[in-house]
Image 1 (spheres, rainbow, N blue to C red):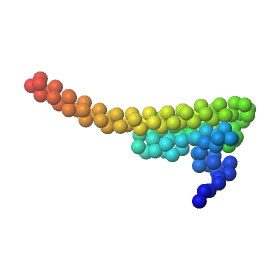
Image 2 (image 1 turned 90 degrees about the vertical axis):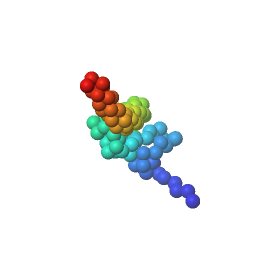
Image 3 (image 1 turned 30 degrees about the vertical axis):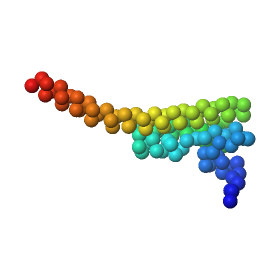
Image 4 (image 1 turned 90 degrees about the horizontal axis):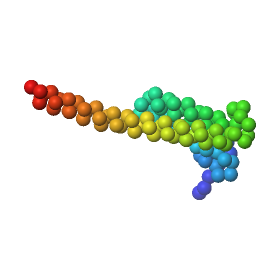
Length: 111
């Protein structure tokens, strides 16, 4: 059973509609990167996600010709900030114990 979504539901769900030139807004990734990543980068991701959704809905006063380009730009920035926030957090979780072990090892060598 297939469910047909109309244009406004496509934008609300963050789906990319092939005919309307809509771009994903990565809202769930942005929220996940705030919770499970570096919060400052996650907030940047959420800001660009909100801008991408506003561009897709046409709520901002931007000429129609520039709207698709700006929506894609904001969408890409939201995705990149979200992914980077999660990757940076995982890297910190791995590097901090490794660096503590290295410092501990070096301190035992000094004594």
